[in-house]
Image (tube, rainbow, N blue to C red; front, side, top):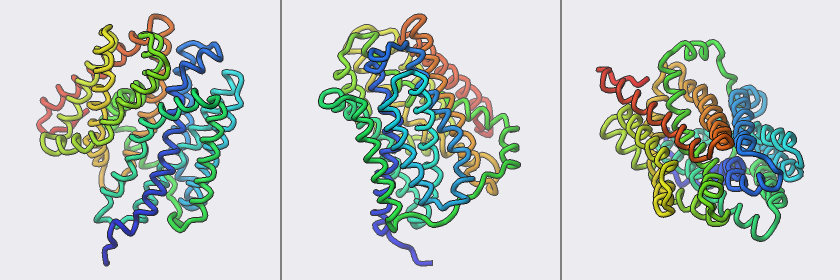
Length: 394
């Protein structure tokens, strides 16, 4: 079969990358907004941290059930439904006046977001020749890294020029319009998805290795998304930064991280994926814990920038190990089962834990606790890696 150059898929790739950017940014935009929402609504840190638990819970349910939906409608229509659901959720969130309605809206936001990912990856496989699939995926993965940078800057624009509630409505409008345009474009996949095989899932659930990887990915996701979620509260409440300065620092800290996964992938291939996963998680945990201890403004700034530089390097090696879990006939089922659970724990439960500890003591203490857990997880993984001659990580 003749190969088609990657350039022939650029339009579709960039369209999908744009949709994924909106999808991801709509979930992380609430991190830089937390100090403002806390003050306006009179809520505590635990309730703020629960925002990400509700988003992750919706995301968890949606990504697990997305195969049933795309099996009935095609991947292109599933992506359109995801975009419309996200936009409507942002409209709703902009109108919420109570904590309960805000949490409900965030749950719906997570439901809409989770529909995109499986269909988005399937569409890339449809658009891009297999010989260039890794490069196509790397273009698509620019979206979350850019979202980490853009969210604080967009939030700053909201706070300076327009109320944050109107800003959410504008962002929701952009997402809905983009999704509808995509629905009429020729860049989507008309293929239908496949409903998940529940009998095969039971095989993974009985694997100790699967649950070991769930634990490691949960800690790794906390080191990136979880720490990012609570960093504005950490900087504003514990270190007295102005929200605008805190958001600028948060955006700057993620700029250099955009290309770091490339280095992480090279190091993993060179020195061993399991070893690199363990070392990165260990040292990321130590840096996260150090954030809770230092008091100098300069050191806080340095560690806020360095922490994500190291943390994002976990995932190239981690995905490579996870994708090989189980026999070839199960494909990427291990990834599909592991990631939703890991996002729920690392991106939802652990930020909530930081918030609860923040109410009892301080956000810094919460950072120290999760940093300690990361270091312990990395240390245990390193111990098992050195002991196991077959280099299987648990």
